[in-house]
Each structure stands twice: as C-alpha cells, then as structure tokens.
Amino acid sequence: MKRRLVLQGLLAAVPAAGALSALLVAPKQALALGGTLPELDQPAPDFALAGFVPPGTEGQRSLQDFQGRWLALYFYPKDFTGGCTLEARGFQQDLAKFHQLGAEVVGISADSAESHASFCGSEGLAFPLLSDPGGLVSRRYGSWISPYSQRHSFLIDPDGVLRERWVAVRPSGHSQEILASLQARITAIPSPIPPSPSSSR
Image (cartoon, rainbow, N blue to C red; front, side, top):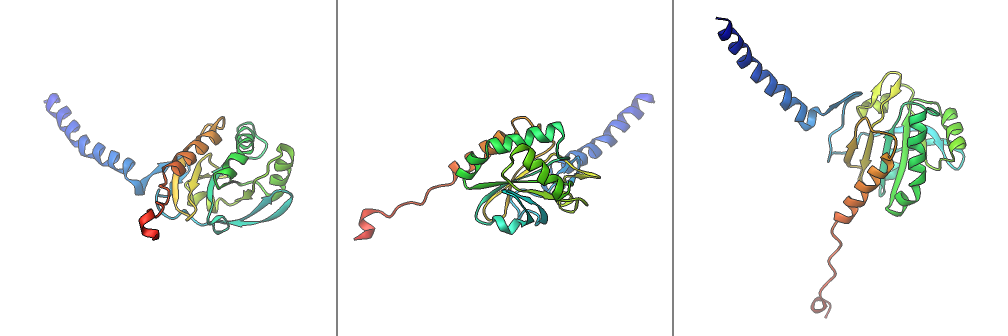
C-alpha cells in the first residue's frame, strides 16, 4: 500500500516538474533575482534618466540617444562599494575598445546624480552613470530588489534591440565578457557584397 502511494505521488509530481521546467526555459518567463528579464531579440525597454555625464555635467540620457550605436547597459548596486568599483574600473579600462567597435557604455544604479559625479571623479570614469532611485527602469530590466539595482548587464544593438543579457555577474572581468560578445556579433555580421565587374559595365 505504501509503495503504491509513493508511486502515485511520483507520477503526480512529474507533470508539475515538467510545467516548472517549461516555465524556466520559456523565453517570456525568463526570471532572475530582481524580477522578470526582458526578452532577447525584442526592442529593449525604454529609459530616460538623469545622471552624471562626463566630462563633467549633469544631464539626462535616453535609449534613443544611443540609436545607431551598440550599447552596453549595466546595472549595479551602489557607488564606491568594492565590487561596483571593480566593475566600473573594468569598463573604463576597456572604454576605448568599446568605442572602436561603435559601442557606448552606460551604468545605472539607485544612487543620486551627485553621488555619480563623485564616483566618476574619484575613479576617472568617462562614461555616463544614470540615477534610478525608485527602480523604475531597473524593474523594466528585471534588475531591482529594493533599495538596490541588481548586478545585471545587457547588450543592445544599434536598432535598439536587446541581443544579450548577463545575470548576477561577477565584477572582475565582466567588461571583457561583454566586449568579447560584441566583437563576435560584429564579426558575424556579413559584409555588403560588392557589385561584380560585369554589372558595372
């Protein structure tokens, strides 16, 4: 009798487990610590946030401002903390390489524009840091557990389409991860085929 009950319990659990695994792999339900992640190969969630824009001004940046360029958008918990400082230094170190590939780097956290200005000045950061104190944009990117943005990153193409995402990243070497993915994607884009000599006659 006990054996039969155990078997019935296992059989009942199989569909539930199957449903759970289907939920986890379904693109529309991609979950992470911080919420539901935006779908890949779809328009990236829009944003328009104030922040600090080097070389030394406070201003606003939106997704549309980066149209025609690749965008490495990264969320992080807090200015001046160990992991966030290490991650920012990595992006700064690789910034020229991102620019050579036609890409920009933008960081987002809940810190104020004033804090971002101090952080950029302290670390010599030459890319924008935007302020999302209520987590509105962080939530759109599945990257918010109040009161902090979570350490997630996204690669957005020149048409505003989300192409890659990294969840709960390790700060050390993360910039290199994104750079390698960007390089691979650009290399994979076919070059325009030049006209044949006969067609130009």
